[in-house]
Every structure is written in C-alpha cells, then in structure tokens.
Image: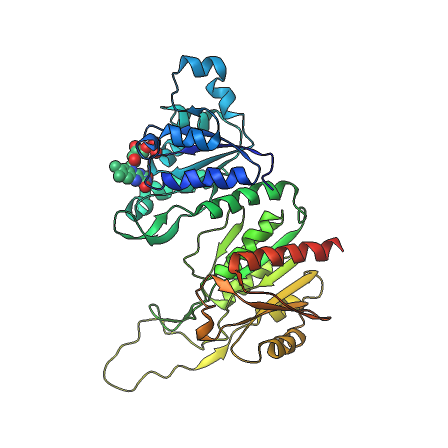
Length: 400
Ligand SMILES: Cc1cc2nc3c(=O)[nH]c(=O)nc-3n(C[C@H](O)[C@H](O)[C@H](O)COP(=O)(O)O)c2cc1C
C-alpha cells in the first residue's frame, strides 16, 4: 500500500520522537520514501544525523536556510509528498496548525501545503486533556486532518493516561489505510461496524456492562477503511482511539447502538462485533438509588433489541453481507453455527472468550469463520491481524 509513496515526516519536540526513527525504518522497508523535517524541539530529542542516516536523505530544519531555498524552497518541500505525517505531533505543533501559525519551517510547510496530513499526537495526559488542546484537535479534525492515537498507558513523566504516541506499526497501518483508501479493493463499498460494550443504566450513576475492550471491532473498522471502504464505526464506551479514516459514532446503550446502525443504512457489509448487553433494567431510576438500610433494590431486567438479527432481517435495505460475532465459552463452533441460522446472518466469527483465553481485553484472538458452506479455523492471531484477514475475506467475497 505504501510502496513508492512519498512521505514527509515532521518530527516534533516530544519524548516520543525516538519512536519516529523506527517509523522511518518501517516505512522504508515497505517501499515508501521518507523525507525528514526536524523542528527545533524535535532536535532536542533526536539528532539530525540519526534522521538523515535512516531516511538516507538530507534533513530539513531551518526556514531561513539560503541553501535549502536554493535547492528546494519550503513551498516546494511542502508539496513534494503524497502525505505529510507529523509524529510526534506535540501540543505546540497542534496549536500552530490550528491557528495557522507559520513561525518555523514545520508550521510554514503545514500552512503552505495542500497535501493531506496525518498527525500522531503525543504529550502528557494533562496537556492532552487541556481545553486548548481539545479545541485544537477538534479544529484539525474538522479540517480533515487524520489522527492516529494517542494511546493510553504509563508515560515517561510517570503519569498514566492518554497521550502516548501510537506505536510505529499503528502509524504505518494508518498510513497504509490512507493510501489503501485511495485504490483499495473495497473502494466504493460502504461498511458498518459495531464495537465495544454497551452500558445499560441502573440509575444516573450506575450501569450494567461487560468486559469488551472494543479492540477487535476497532481493528476491523481500521482494516476495512484500509482497503478503501467508506467505514462507519458505532462504538460503545471504550478506551480505544478512533481508527484513522473511519467515521466514529459513540453511543452508550443497545438501543442507541441500534438507532445509529439503522441510520447508517444502506451499507454493503455490516459487522456486529460489539458485545451488546442482552438485557437492560426495565425502568432505570431517574434519581440515584439510595442505600438506606432497607430492602435491597430489585432490578427487573428486560430484553434489549437484537441488532444483528434486526440488520439481517431488513427487507429493503438488508446489507449484502451481514456478519456477527459469537463470544462463547464452550462448544464454540456448534453454538456459532446455531447462532448464524437463528439470526439469519451470513457469516459468524466465533471466538472463545473463556477467562483463561484472555480474549476479552487482550490483544490476541483465535477465531473460526462459520459460513453457510464451511467452517474455517484461523490460527491464533493478533486482533489487528484478525481484522485485516476478515477485511481481505470480505473484499474477496465482493470480488467473486
Ligand atoms: C523532557 C521534555 C519532554 C517533552 N515532551 C513533550 C511531549 O511529549 N509532547 C509535547 O507536546 N511537548 C513536550 N515537551 C514540550 C515541547 O518540547 C515544547 O512545547 C516544544 O516547544 C515543542 O516543540 P515543537 O513545536 O518543535 O514540537 C517536552 C519538553 C521537555 C523538556
């Protein structure tokens, strides 16, 4: 997907800059060319020599370099790439981009370009959550800047939260997604994916939920977008970052998820990977339930709508391919085959979610693809790989 593509990598002044050196390596081994721009801040963290050695090219740092202007002017540099990648995108660089500042080479390039831009933000969690950064991010997204990450986790500063730059391979996947969308096998197709758990309120502060992380559904959406599908992801509450190039609709309850899915029709393929709560509290309390020493509250449950069966049973706008997930803890394939028939969907991806498999919340998944004709046993894979293999399988299905 990136073979022969020209990327301009702007390395900002964040502690994650060292990961951008690995990003260069990963892109180049896939056949992309990388031209490096180092900000003054970036040069505090990685040397121009490292970036130059890895890109096997000159590194651009100075807006007012007479030599650079004679060789390749900053305007020409800004248009010399198929995609501009900013990694790490510091709070400062994002602010400059949002306000249209052109005070150094990187910000001037970003203002002077009409090439698409992908940013991989990286910063301390408080900087990330500051209203200024939140507003800058919204501005950039609204202008069509693609964003990958940041991830949640421990930070170099000792704190924990969102702000870790996406890993080099995640950034590569987002870049592949960008280029794949331009000429991938699912170009012209629409895809709808559900992901994560749903939260069913008990009262204004309590809810029923499950352990779904959303990792599998998000990976599928990213992979479909990577093959060129116009992808909508309807997701319950998760800590997963929005996949690049995907329209994300955040909901909380099963009924909201159904409404968002129906609003997403028509679509060519629907993949229901969310762990939708089977039940909700029949009438959630409007005020917080009090622990007053009296009788324990009795929660009467009622069934939630069946999103998979609803999509599979649509008369006029049924997606051509409806795929469900079966999370089982025993007789995985038999239960999945029965579920496929019961729900009226085309394929079921069956996975074993027994606690000792670590599937819920983990990064790996061992699945079986159950169709009307056969059962395919896939080897243990990462959730990202399951997403990519499923997306490829969907593309083959439509091509056949
Ligand atoms: C040790 C250290 C680590 C830093 N890490 C980050 C970071 O991860 N993200 C960030 O936005 N700013 C970080 N900063 C602050 C930026 O370096 C500073 O805002 C700088 O002006 C950004 O430069 P840039 O515009 O070249 O990105 C850090 C500063 C120091 C001293």
